[in-house]
Length: 391
Ligand code: PMP
Ligand code: GLN
Image (cartoon, rainbow, N blue to C red):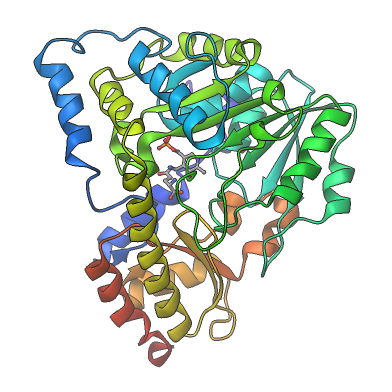
């Protein structure tokens, strides 16, 4: 009986689907998958609907993406970061940041090239590197601060290094990489003639004094970085799956050649919605950040009160919480127990976000997401503060 290819043999159900199913079975409040339970701005939806109604967007979109969205991506990059992106040749619209990363990795990495992954890493990066025939090299972030060691980062680079995959603000740790950390990576990329493929989907979610710095803005990096982002998190439309990859046209050509052979074009109406969204005024982005700052504080205090030791989120919408003070098992056992006995779902990171070499670093943590209405966070809080009584 014919079966699937060896290439996919190890890619079982993702942790997000697994936890969603368990959460549903046990009627748990789901703080697992990063999936807002509210809509983004109405005017963004209206812009997509208008493009359907007036017939602009009911047939295939251009493969690169619609011109107003490519222009909006370039304008947004200039407005927030002073980046100079060519909207014609330096931007390609993708099916979310997920496809942006996947197509970029496949289009830019040759078999045998080494690719540095900072771990924990978003779960889809490693399959992309493997399918490209790349050789992953892992640099761990270590709890409780989730910082990398400079010597380990230096040691990971060599003449075979083709790319480093970055993600800042970082899923799942909530780290926002500092200028000093990014400068070290930029220095090493230039020394070894490597590129950065930088996933910045949480670019507008930074808290306190933390500042999002695209690595493309560092000296010497503009021409050796592909920056990937999407409308999912910044505008709370994860279901639309509209993202982009931008950078030097020579690099974006690599992304494009994969993209055109998998999808050719992206959902058309939602591109007009996200084009509108990227042009929203600065007050939208400031209010968005304030809203999430409130949610971060709320979940932060709930988790502390419940007995977790937490690493404060500097950005994104996740908190990594250490449960080892009151639970003996590993992260998967804890996540299952929490769903079944407390009625709250979270993501156990060890299996999906770490290589086997560094998996132990994730065994005592789970990831909670705070992209939920406050009443949902409060309801989860009522359950969580009672958890130790159930042990
Ligand atoms: N990268 C990271 C770090 C993520 O957390 C996510 C989840 N949204 C994605 C990529 C995928 O983003 P999109 O929905 O835009 O494909
Ligand atoms: N980015 C979201 C998360 O990390 C969603 C991931 C997914 O559904 N693949 O939870």
